[in-house]
Image (tube, rainbow, N blue to C red; front, side, top):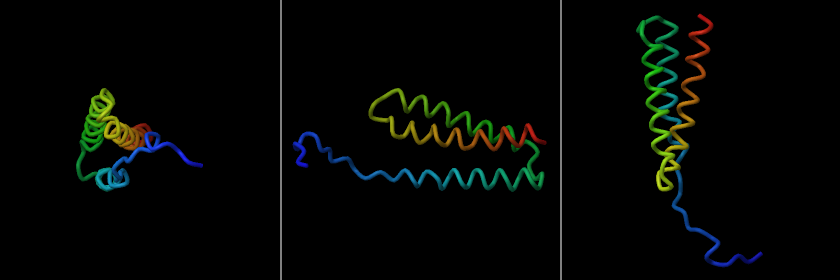
Length: 91
């Protein structure tokens, strides 16, 4: 099927998988600190990081040019908030 040239866009490559590195580091350090009780205020600190991701996601989604970054920050917000909420409610 031949598409017209204006239909095909030449988007630059995206490296969204690299956002998993800081997310994994944050969740790993949260899990370690929560299990060893090394840092008693780890729950509040992780809530703060998740809240900053939420504000950054809303800011990123407010413009068409930054919507990809906003979407990635939204995923980071949800991936940080769920384990922290489950841990606080459980324990």
